[in-house]
Length: 365
Image 1 (cartoon, rainbow, N blue to C red):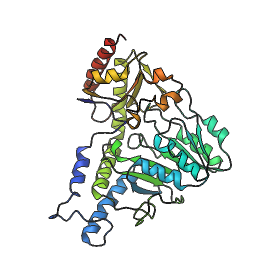
Image 2 (image 1 turned 135 degrees about the vertical axis):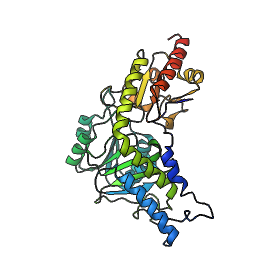
Image 3 (image 1 turned 90 degrees about the horizontal axis):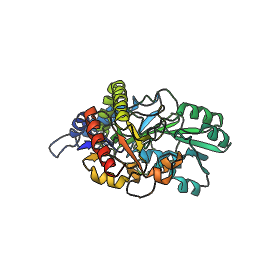
Image 4 (image 1 turned 180 degrees about the vertical axis):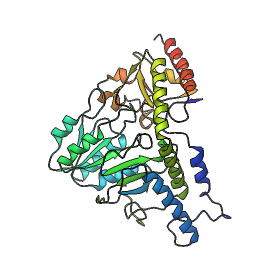
C-alpha cells in the first residue's frame, strides 16, 4: 500500500501514540482520572492536558488562549455562530465554513461568499469592495485542503481591520507545516489528525479580547466556552504531535518541496490545478483530459489517493473548489489529489506514478 492522502488525514506518529497510551488507564492504573476533578488523579490528568496545551499553543500566534475542541469543524462553527455581524468568506473554503450559511442567515446576519482568482488565491479586491460597516467576521483558509494553494492571509487581515471586522483563519492544512506566527488574526482553527496526531481532537486559538457565545453548553470546562470532559489521551497525543511538528518544521518543508519536484517530473503530462508558486508543496492536485477517475481508483487500489476532498468523496458532484477556479465539470471530474508528507518517500511517489500513468494509458490517454 502507498498512502498519498495526507490532506484527508495523516498516520499517527509513534511518539503521539506513546503519549496517549499512558492516559488510557485501566482500573489498576492511576491515569484514568477526570482532568476536571480536584483529587490527585484529576490533577495528574489536568497537568497532562495543560502540558499538551502548551505544545499546541507554541505553534499558534503569540499570546491569546488555546481551547481544545473535538476538531476544527467545531472550532470553526463556534466562531462563525458565536460572533456578531455579517460574515464574508471565499468560494473555496471548507464545508465546515460554507455550510454554516443557513444557520448564520437564520440569525439575521448576511453570509457573503466571494470569488477567488484563477490560481485559487483569495480575491482581495473583491473582499475590499464587499466589506461594509456591518462586517463582523472574515473567514479565510491559510492553505486550501483540495488544491494546496496558500492564501494571502496577512493582506486579508489588513483589509478586514480597515472595516473593523475580526478574522477567522482555518489553519487545518497549515498548522505544524508552515509558521502561523507571521500574522495576527482573531481566531485560528486547527485539527490534530492532520499533523500525525489522533482524530477527535482539535483546537481554537483566540485573542484575549475576543468574545464568543458558546456552541456547546454544560460545565463550561474550556474557558467557559466549550463544555465537556476533555480526553487527556487525545490531548496528550495532540501535544506530542505538535511538539514533533515544531521541531521538524524546517525539515518537513524541505522534504515536501523535494517530493513535489519529483512528483511534477513524474506527472509531466498532467496539468496542475491551482497556483504553482503559492502552494503547500505536499499537495499535488492534477488533471488529465478525459480521465475516468473512478476507473483509475479501481485500477490502482493499492494507492490511497483522492478524487477530491475526503469530505466530499462519493457525492458524485464536481469539486466546488475546482469549479471556483474556473474548471469545467468535466475537467474537475478528471482531477486527482496526491498528498504526501513526513513518512512519504521518493520511491513511494515513483511507484505510484508508474501505476497511475500506466492505468491512465490503459484508458487511451
